[in-house]
Structures are given as C-alpha cells and as structure tokens.
Image (cartoon, rainbow, N blue to C red; front, side, top):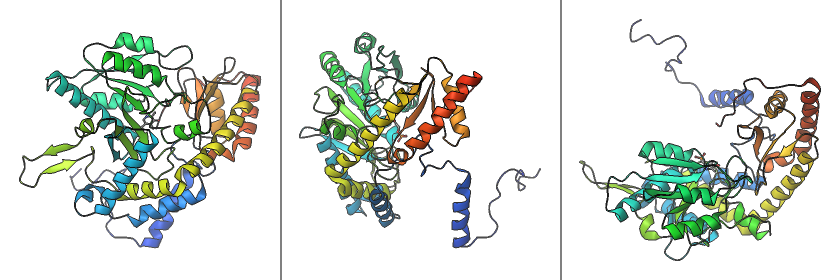
Length: 424
Ligand SMILES: *Cc1c(COP(=O)(O)O)cnc(C)c1O
C-alpha cells in the first residue's frame, strides 16, 4: 500500500467542505446512540442544578467562546479578573485565611497534578534536595488522578486500607508516613462510596508529623459547605482545619459550572507561588503558565464566574436542600428493597448500593438493558451513581425498574459472569 492510500477503516481527510446546517444536523443525529443523560440515565459525567443555571452557563461560555485564558495576563484582563474572582470566592467558601491563594484549572485531574507538583517542589526546597522524589500517603479510596500524577512525576503512592466504616484509617496512614512523605491526602468525599474522610484527624496527624495535607474535594467541594450549612452531619474538611495546606475542588461537578472548570487552592500564598511554571531559555519572551495546559478555554472561566454569581450561596443552598433531601428519600427506598443495601454512609450525592445475597453486577447489567447505564464498584461489588437534579425526577422509574430487576435476579439466580467495573 502506498503511503498516500489510507487504510479503508480510517476516516479520510475530507476532500470538500460541508455546509453549517448539514453538520449541525449530523451532530444532533450522532447523539442518538448516546445514553439519555437528560433523562437521568447516565450514572456520572453530567450534572444539573436548575434550568437557569444551564442557560447562564451556556450563554456566558459562548460570550467568551473565542478568548483564551492563557492570554489573561496580557490580551484579556477581563478573563484574568474573573479567574481571580472565582478563586477568591472559592477561598472564602473554604474558609481560607488571609494570604491564601489559588488558581483555576481545566479539571480535577489537573488540579490534583498541580497540587502534587507544588507540594513536591516545596518539599524539595525544604529538604534542600532538588531531586527528591518522595511518597504520598492516602486511603485506598483515593482517586486515580493521584496515581496519574505520581506516575508522571515518579512519586510512590502508598494506599492504606480504609477502616471497617470505609473512611480513611488515620492510624494506618500514620504508620505509612516516613521521612520521604511529601503529601497526605484525604477525600471530601471519595469517589467510590461518597464518604468524607476524617479530615480533622488527618489535619492533626499532618500537623504533628509536619507533612502537607491535601484535601481532594474535587467531587464534593462545592456541595459540602452548603450541606453543612443546612445542618447535615458532613465532617469539616476545609481550611478551618489548620493542617489542610491545599484543596482541589471541581466547579464542573457540584459547582454546576460548564466544563472545563476546577480550582486548586493553597493556605499559603508563598507556597501557591511555587505552582506556576516559568521558562526563559528560548528565543521568545519569558514563558509563564499557572496550569499544566497552555491554551485554555476562557469560556470555562467566564461561565464559572457567571454561575457562581447567578446561584449565590442562597441558590446553592436551595439546590443542595432539594438534591440531598431527594437522595435521602432514594436511600430509604433502596434500603427497603429486600436484598439491597447502601454501601457505607454516603455524606453527599454519591450513592452506591450492593447486596449480600444477589450478584450486584447482575443487577447493574439488567438495569443497563433497561437503559440505565450502570457504573460498578469492585470492592465491594456495587452499583454506583453520582446524582444531580438530572436523576431526581426519574427516581421513581429507576426504583420501579430496580425492584423488578432484583426480583428477576433473585428468581433466576442470575450472575454477571465476567462483567468488569470501569470508570470513564
Ligand atoms: C472527578 C474526580 C476527580 C478528577 O476530576 P476530573 O475533573 O475528572 O479530572 C478527582 N477526584 C475525585 C474524588 C473525583 O470524583
């Protein structure tokens, strides 16, 4: 085959352009095979608060569709101003002391990568060892974005089994710390069970051992403070705990902002200042970026600024109250289905359920056949959902299907064979 002839299965580069309306129609029709996420049938990936939040997020994103947040320091001071305002609002929400600082990023994985990098840099400077690699100590429920960061930076991750109640085992983590530990991590909440680790105890441990504590509040950071204000028993997790040095919190999850949008925040502005990358050894000017990525959609910045201002604390409280009370009812109904049990004590909006008698994967796969895309956990085997207002209205339908599926799985003794739990 000559180099000019692409393999038949590869999409050729289009010879001729196509009109706008035709392509827009095709985009809509391409969606027809996707999961009906508007109908609450996707277990994760998309979030919703209220219709007006979608509207302002979309309109604000489009108002800054072409601008580039990389140019915030030069061409687009308005973008930089909104970015700083979003960071300030986040620092206030998380009770950061004066002198704290932070940055926006394109997502939880990037915020985590940046926090790990900054902690290692600060640790290298404190140790006077510019090549120090070190290790990171965390509960086994830690999000794999940390393993990705560790893989990229050649850091060892020590995952410590959780306690019987599925929260971080602080004593076990204490035993895993050594002189090379550059970071302790707790989640608020963790992805698998939706439970907040005992961050207060981790904060004490971090202070007593002189180790950096990062709180991964990627998934719950913008919901937990409002749940706490509503009087719900969500453990403290933010900068009010003096051992917490950094927090990652995603706006594009329970901040209900358009993707891509996250925040990474530091107690100490001087340590935050170690995050940006600077370079001058090339023919162009001084290069400085705060994020891993260079070019960044300003739409994510503008939309986040607009959504935070549109909802305000009273709006987030209203959404949290409706969402969490809906989820309370959902959990009660789940627990009332014979054979089904909720895993652990979910603190916020992630709920996983399993069974001691029936194969949870068989239940998940049968729900999948009814159009409810399943997300599965491995330990324990469970069905997992990250719930937002998209799911609330369809809870009765979901539960009706689940009851039937549970009946089928029980009556026929169904198992799922070699089904695999996956993420993404
Ligand atoms: C989603 C999530 C992340 C990663 O965030 P992305 O925006 O998908 O990169 C990190 N930690 C937790 C606990 C999460 O749920």
